[in-house]
Image 1 (tube, rainbow, N blue to C red):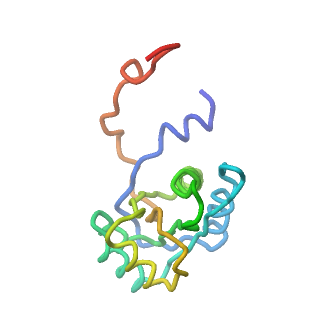
Image 2 (cartoon, rainbow, N blue to C red):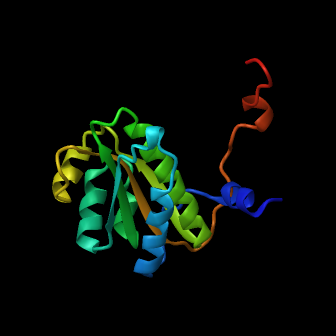
Amino acid sequence: MNEFVELIKSRRSIRGYEKRPISKEILSDIIDAARLAPSANNMQPWEFTVITEKATLAGIADLTSWGKFIKEAAAAIIVSGNSESPHIVEDCSAATENILLAARAYKVGSCWVAGYKRAYSEHIQKLLGMPKEQEVVSIIGLGYYYANPEPINKRPLEKVLHWEKY
Protein backbone atom coordinates (compact mmCIF):
# COMPACT_ATOMS: atom_id res chain seq x y z
CA MET A 1 0.00 0.00 0.00
CA ASN A 2 1.10 3.55 -0.67
CA GLU A 3 2.88 5.01 2.39
CA PHE A 4 0.89 8.25 2.31
CA VAL A 5 -2.44 6.46 1.94
CA GLU A 6 -1.47 4.26 4.89
CA LEU A 7 -0.73 7.41 6.93
CA ILE A 8 -4.23 8.70 6.13
CA LYS A 9 -5.84 5.39 7.01
CA SER A 10 -3.96 5.13 10.32
CA ARG A 11 -4.76 8.68 11.53
CA ARG A 12 -7.04 8.84 14.57
CA SER A 13 -8.44 11.57 16.77
CA ILE A 14 -6.21 11.54 19.86
CA ARG A 15 -7.45 13.19 23.05
CA GLY A 16 -4.92 11.87 25.57
CA TYR A 17 -1.31 13.03 25.52
CA GLU A 18 2.03 12.38 27.15
CA LYS A 19 3.49 15.27 29.13
CA ARG A 20 6.16 15.99 26.54
CA PRO A 21 6.62 19.22 24.56
CA ILE A 22 6.61 19.37 20.78
CA SER A 23 9.60 21.22 19.35
CA LYS A 24 9.11 24.56 17.63
CA GLU A 25 10.74 23.06 14.53
CA ILE A 26 8.08 20.35 14.30
CA LEU A 27 5.25 22.80 15.01
CA SER A 28 6.61 25.17 12.36
CA ASP A 29 6.86 22.36 9.82
CA ILE A 30 3.27 21.31 10.57
CA ILE A 31 2.15 24.91 9.92
CA ASP A 32 4.25 24.99 6.77
CA ALA A 33 2.28 21.95 5.53
CA ALA A 34 -0.97 23.74 6.44
CA ARG A 35 -0.15 26.89 4.48
CA LEU A 36 0.39 24.74 1.36
CA ALA A 37 -3.21 23.49 1.39
CA PRO A 38 -5.35 24.12 -1.66
CA SER A 39 -7.27 27.38 -1.60
CA ALA A 40 -10.14 28.60 -3.78
CA ASN A 41 -8.84 31.28 -6.16
CA ASN A 42 -5.57 31.01 -4.19
CA MET A 43 -7.02 33.47 -1.65
CA GLN A 44 -5.22 31.79 1.27
CA PRO A 45 -7.43 33.41 3.92
CA TRP A 46 -5.89 31.45 6.78
CA GLU A 47 -3.78 32.41 9.77
CA PHE A 48 -2.40 29.96 12.33
CA THR A 49 -1.94 30.70 16.02
CA VAL A 50 0.15 28.16 17.94
CA ILE A 51 -0.44 27.94 21.68
CA THR A 52 1.95 26.14 24.04
CA GLU A 53 1.43 28.01 27.31
CA LYS A 54 -0.47 25.80 29.75
CA ALA A 55 -2.64 28.62 31.12
CA THR A 56 -3.81 29.58 27.63
CA LEU A 57 -4.42 25.94 26.68
CA ALA A 58 -6.54 25.59 29.82
CA GLY A 59 -8.43 28.78 28.98
CA ILE A 60 -9.22 27.52 25.49
CA ALA A 61 -10.27 24.13 26.85
CA ASP A 62 -12.60 25.75 29.36
CA LEU A 63 -14.26 27.83 26.64
CA THR A 64 -14.99 25.01 24.20
CA SER A 65 -17.89 22.59 24.30
CA TRP A 66 -15.99 19.50 23.12
CA GLY A 67 -12.33 20.46 23.58
CA LYS A 68 -11.73 19.86 27.28
CA PHE A 69 -8.81 17.56 26.35
CA ILE A 70 -6.88 20.59 25.03
CA LYS A 71 -5.98 21.37 28.66
CA GLU A 72 -3.62 18.33 28.57
CA ALA A 73 -2.24 18.97 25.07
CA ALA A 74 1.35 20.01 24.44
CA ALA A 75 0.10 22.57 21.93
CA ALA A 76 -2.97 23.78 20.13
CA ILE A 77 -3.30 25.39 16.75
CA ILE A 78 -6.09 27.83 16.08
CA VAL A 79 -6.90 27.99 12.39
CA SER A 80 -8.65 31.25 11.59
CA GLY A 81 -9.59 32.93 8.37
CA ASN A 82 -10.44 36.33 7.03
CA SER A 83 -14.20 36.71 7.42
CA GLU A 84 -14.36 38.49 4.04
CA SER A 85 -13.32 35.32 2.21
CA PRO A 86 -16.26 33.54 0.57
CA HIS A 87 -14.37 30.26 0.98
CA ILE A 88 -13.21 30.57 4.59
CA VAL A 89 -14.66 27.23 5.71
CA GLU A 90 -13.41 25.21 2.74
CA ASP A 91 -9.93 26.75 2.69
CA CYS A 92 -9.35 26.61 6.44
CA SER A 93 -10.72 23.06 6.59
CA ALA A 94 -8.23 21.99 3.91
CA ALA A 95 -5.44 23.58 5.95
CA THR A 96 -6.74 21.85 9.08
CA GLU A 97 -6.60 18.46 7.37
CA ASN A 98 -2.99 19.14 6.35
CA ILE A 99 -2.23 19.85 10.03
CA LEU A 100 -3.80 16.56 11.11
CA LEU A 101 -1.85 14.58 8.51
CA ALA A 102 1.46 16.37 9.08
CA ALA A 103 1.10 15.78 12.82
CA ARG A 104 0.52 12.07 12.18
CA ALA A 105 3.65 11.97 10.01
CA TYR A 106 5.60 13.26 13.04
CA LYS A 107 3.87 10.71 15.31
CA VAL A 108 2.08 13.57 17.05
CA GLY A 109 -1.53 12.94 17.99
CA SER A 110 -4.19 15.46 17.09
CA CYS A 111 -7.88 16.14 17.44
CA TRP A 112 -9.90 18.78 15.63
CA VAL A 113 -12.57 20.81 17.40
CA ALA A 114 -15.00 22.85 15.31
CA GLY A 115 -14.76 26.57 15.85
CA TYR A 116 -16.63 28.22 13.00
CA LYS A 117 -19.65 30.22 14.19
CA ARG A 118 -19.55 28.55 17.61
CA ALA A 119 -20.65 30.45 20.71
CA TYR A 120 -17.13 30.21 22.18
CA SER A 121 -15.24 31.37 19.09
CA GLU A 122 -15.52 35.07 19.87
CA HIS A 123 -14.17 34.42 23.38
CA ILE A 124 -11.17 32.55 21.95
CA GLN A 125 -10.65 35.39 19.49
CA LYS A 126 -10.51 37.87 22.39
CA LEU A 127 -8.35 35.59 24.56
CA LEU A 128 -5.74 35.44 21.80
CA GLY A 129 -5.98 39.10 20.76
CA MET A 130 -7.04 38.21 17.22
CA PRO A 131 -8.23 40.97 14.89
CA LYS A 132 -12.01 41.20 14.53
CA GLU A 133 -11.91 40.15 10.86
CA GLN A 134 -10.28 36.82 11.79
CA GLU A 135 -12.85 34.11 12.46
CA VAL A 136 -11.93 30.92 14.29
CA VAL A 137 -12.59 27.92 12.03
CA SER A 138 -10.92 25.10 13.94
CA ILE A 139 -8.98 24.34 17.09
CA ILE A 140 -6.53 21.44 17.01
CA GLY A 141 -5.07 19.86 20.12
CA LEU A 142 -1.64 18.26 19.62
CA GLY A 143 0.55 15.99 21.70
CA TYR A 144 2.57 12.82 21.67
CA TYR A 145 0.26 9.90 22.30
CA TYR A 146 0.50 6.73 24.37
CA ALA A 147 -1.03 4.52 21.67
CA ASN A 148 -2.86 5.00 18.41
CA PRO A 149 -6.39 3.76 19.10
CA GLU A 150 -8.16 1.22 16.96
CA PRO A 151 -10.35 2.73 14.27
CA ILE A 152 -13.87 3.63 15.22
CA ASN A 153 -16.75 2.34 13.20
CA LYS A 154 -16.56 3.97 9.78
CA ARG A 155 -19.18 3.37 7.13
CA PRO A 156 -17.99 0.70 4.68
CA LEU A 157 -16.68 1.80 1.31
CA GLU A 158 -19.50 0.06 -0.54
CA LYS A 159 -22.04 2.15 1.41
CA VAL A 160 -20.50 5.50 0.45
CA LEU A 161 -19.06 4.91 -3.04
CA HIS A 162 -21.22 5.55 -6.11
CA TRP A 163 -20.05 5.00 -9.68
CA GLU A 164 -21.40 7.22 -12.46
CA LYS A 165 -24.72 7.96 -10.69
CA TYR A 166 -25.86 8.21 -7.11
